[in-house]
Amino acid sequence: MDLSDPHFERPLLLLAALACAALAFAGLRWAERRRRAGLAGFAAERLLGLLLAGHSSARRSAKDFSVSLGVLLLGVALAGPRWGHRTTAARASTEDVVFVLDVSKSMMAGDARPSRLARAKASIAAFVKAKGTGSVGLVAFAGQAFLQCPLTRDYDAFHRTLEETDSSVIQVTGTDLGRALDEAEAAFAPNRSRKLVILLTDGEDLEAGGVEAAKRLARKGLVVHAVGVGTAAGGTISVLGPLGTLETLKDAEGAAVISRLDEATLAKVAEAAGGRFVMLGSAGEGMEALRLAVEAGTDSAHAGLQGVPREEWFVALALLLIVGETLLSTRRREAAPSA
Image (cartoon, rainbow, N blue to C red):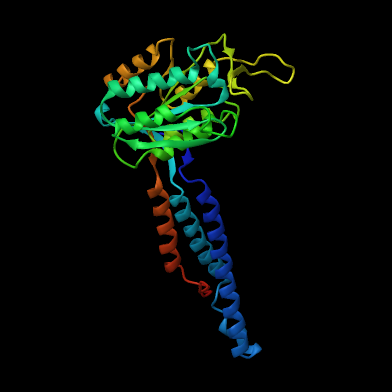
């Protein structure tokens, strides 16, 4: 059996399962104490021992523990246990694509003309125009991430939204790749289409959550491609000054801020989610190569790698415990008569 990559789809439910199991055990023990107290009030003290002579407290505790453990195992099953992998294939013509576009200040660097952001937007528009099938969506991100255009086949509406997306749409500064990928995941509908995420950024993951988020998406069958926008040499960042004119962004000491492409981070993000890392290039040739690979079905390391559901193991164990509890008597075993 493949035991690789053990995880839970909904790990927070594990805490709820533990709480429910603890409450169930406490409730059962309280009920047992109430029964004993009621019996003590009904029978005289000298008769109480005779009434309880055949009752096993240890067996009663075992029954309560079995029920509580069964509740815990059902909660674990609801948390979505996964281990091992299976691949799922899907036709490229049915793919859904969400573009995740970095709109942070660093995307205004001039090492891609006229700016990184403008070049990225042009390459997205060209990709969608040439693609011609499937649904597309758009997530913009900086220090926060928002779905700008839900998945749609209305390409005109998508292009209008893309054109209106600029560095002013996200007010929270920074670059949070993890939050952006989580927002992209939420944009997908639960259908059988192949799900692709195309991330366009300079790779400056200030919150350092991109790789872990990509792993989470991969577990759910999503493929993440990373497109590096900019150059390793970097460039200065142009921002609007107080007078509405473009000025070079400077640090606290008055030196021009240089933003550089972080190829290593983007390569790790793509690898974690079974996708490709490509450089956008001065004319968007990287995106065009990626589009051709997507059409040919050779773009990713797998057609869709998903964790294997294992809920049935925990449900089966829970049922065995609950059924076993009903069969377990609380009476003591009679001692064998001596010869």
